[in-house]
Length: 161
Image (cartoon, rainbow, N blue to C red; front, top):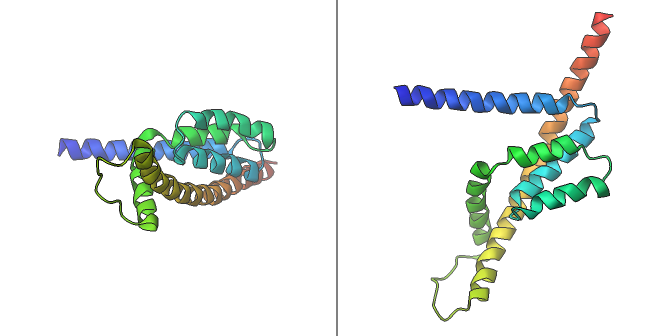
């Protein structure tokens, strides 16, 4: 029983942190679109398998796209941590494998570069599909949450007057 209670507490704490994160992000003085697009771009960069360089790319995004909200962009990179992304990589490989067909058993005559090409294209195709899907879904969810909280702040200010 103790382990189950501990698991429920951890899950509850995790969801409380997620709720707090979205509330904090949505209360930033920025448009809901800028907040949501920052989260969507950060989500794409976190899920697409370019670990390490994704942070460098994220640093360049605000230079190219001035209206993106930097806090939600880097918050998304933190939100999609390795504990979440690693299982998504396995799912992405499965999706890519479904598109390209199953891999034959590895034979020793195949060169290293052929193996890398053969397996990485499955990973990149599957993760591209996942990254785009989660980025679009993240944009919609964060945009709705931002609209809700910003509208709530406006209503609260008006009702206090």
